[in-house]
Image 1: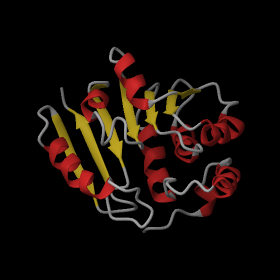
Image 2: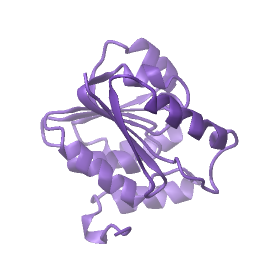
Image 3: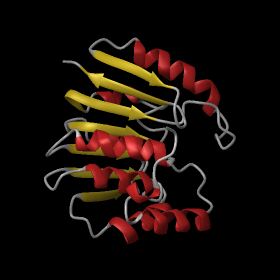
Image 4: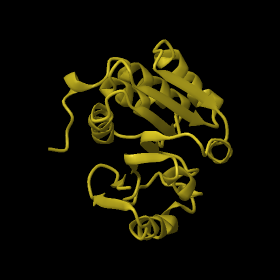
Length: 193
């Protein structure tokens, strides 16, 4: 149940993974998270999707694989070297817009935007200013986060932030939440109104 069959991987994933390893980028989402992202994207036909933390594009590849032709994905990251890998392998897809900018700044400047699905895979919008990310959800929209179970590659300061974030999210009115002790530790938050 924990393995995603290789034949279900997005076509660009192997090449992105190879460049991710070469770059030394070690906070990439794992295949189980990717498979769930693909299913969540598929649940939002003609959806507007936001990814906070492009990294090298591994998660974006999964999201694009689940999206229909009318859906769009906006992905924001501060690391131009990592995002260049995503551009190289996924930039041909007209549904994808890559923005190289500080995620917190992008959130502050785009509070009028609305999204059906938000994958917050960076500190901005997750550990820093999560309320700004939640504000962007449409009714019925899904906010999704990972990296909630202890991992050896966590950066300093990550561990104490996790329980505070989970408790804060669960206390927000107008949302339904579920914790999933699967993959790297996941949480789904759905806006109910």
